[in-house]
Amino acid sequence: MVQGVFAVLVTLVALVATPDALVGKIVLFAAAAAPLLLALRSRSRATKARAAATESGERAWLAAAEELAHGGTTAKKVAKELAIDPARAERLLTDGAARSRVRIDVEAGGDDIVYRTEDLSSDEYPALDEREGAGEVRRSRA
Image (cartoon, rainbow, N blue to C red; front, side):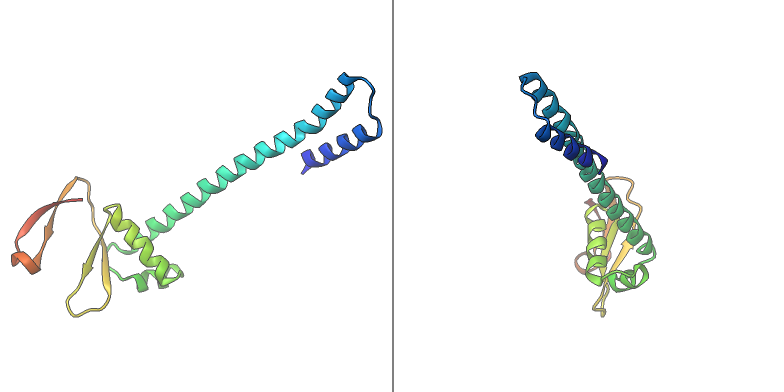
């Protein structure tokens, strides 16, 4: 804000007291342009900081959703607990599944998808496929 006001004042002075010498014109132009360049740099830094803050906020929402999915939950319950839209809760939980932190289960007889957090510290973990292998444990990659 201060930089913009200074740039305007210097520009007004340059318009009123236009020097005849080329060096004087260059000095007044530089004095008017410097605050403008500083303001543009500040805006660029603010844009980067805003993007970083937005990303941090999304990571916090994801962590909260994953924490709620620890014992097994649905997107509706996460949405109610976090006071967010159910579609956003489902997107958060699905993002957690894409990062291999949340397992997605469809329980028999239920219409809701159940999300569970798992500790997946290694690349391989056992997955139980009851439909195909009659309870046989197979190894799958995350």
